[in-house]
Length: 98
Image (tube, rainbow, N blue to C red):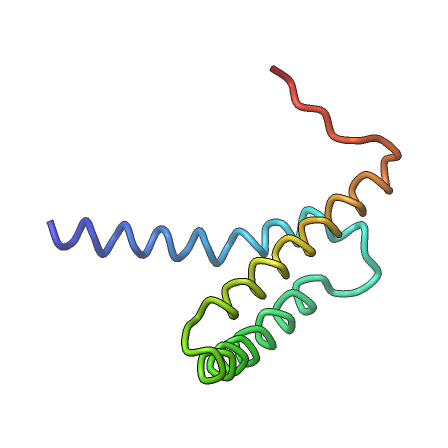
């Protein structure tokens, strides 16, 4: 049973690592720079700055609520930027099919 758990975790980790690269390869023709390098650099900056900011906010407020609120706001802003860019390129809004 333990082998199945380890194998499942390895598959999930491999999928998590491959997904950004697959997305970057899919969108590479839209950009004039190395998108994988930019995504890796942004990820690295987040890995360094995130814990520092969370620690500072926790020492100031006594909980991680402030850090979670900032992370949520950043995620919503990024999603909004992606939506604006995607609708701006095609000139149409996304439609869902029921």
